[in-house]
Image 1 (cartoon, one colour):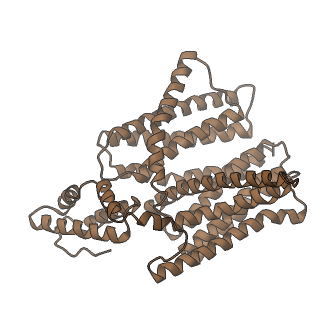
Image 2: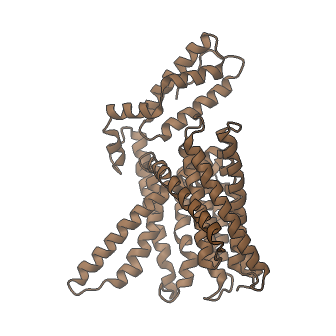
Image 3: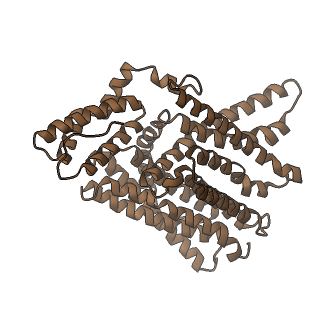
Length: 464
């Protein structure tokens, strides 16, 4: 990246450098342009800024005018894609000539580190079998502990790749050990609600520990937290694709061997599926790191597609609630469903934020997102009303309802302030960056609540 050494006004070279850095990061996130292309565009941008500053404009004004003159980044991306159409296909190759010896060496090291971490995840899945535990007879154990088999190895790979400091590594180990103790020390019966609550919340807590490994020494950085949000979405896409492929492989393997009188049910259920799932957790993380910008653009497309659909569905549900005057069923399955719905809404919001041009003015899609968030907020309030009523009446409190109550309060606060920031942004009274800072700054709240549920709820409800 070139260093700007042109003329500066007293209004601030630091502010201009920050704007150029933000613009460059956005360009690189688009996926079609390589760092070399970004360098070329940045040189062109800086040259335009120099000329405009020399003509009498302030640094801020010159930057905005220069960006406007460069035109749409989508058009620039298409132009570069036409000239270098072979790049995308080269990016899709897992290994090969990287064009630079240092990059190739690092890529090979990452590959071997990933293979080692994936092997560790596979071994972790099978270690309990040495102590007589089986998937069929000890399902509750594997339900509580499955993320503990895979996520520590993914975190180890990310921490190695980020060259995390010893203090960060110690924190990671301590948190995973704490999660293992919470999952296994409490005397929980097989039919205990606390097992369900722990099995749902422990993966959330541990995934945010993976986030600590991802951001490493930059855990206070809003940009790095947003990068982890992007990583999460891309990891999910890769993992789902591998799961679908693994399902097809398992079906073919089972049926082809069954056709010759061999039924590989034990191999598929005891080895292929659990070991493949654990390894896929690590492999998906490596793919995101190795192939950044290949799948990254899928998430914004899905966001654009599903935001109007979910908005229409939520509005239709609210109309039906008003029309029928029927309360919401707050049994366990319904609570999980509504919480997942609210999480999907937040996911759509987060991914639209991660892919949005921070310099673009508010548009129709921002208003649509505001409608989506307001609809989710209304549903959250209805669910909270029903849960509170059930807890205070003759039914009493249970771990499921208490956890759902807290989760909906946590989501309510996020949705309410997100709606306010979106409204202010649409009305051009709040910058886009405020909404991004709010979402990334709220991640520790999710982590804190998940750990509270995992550590405090079982003894609080007497392991019921």
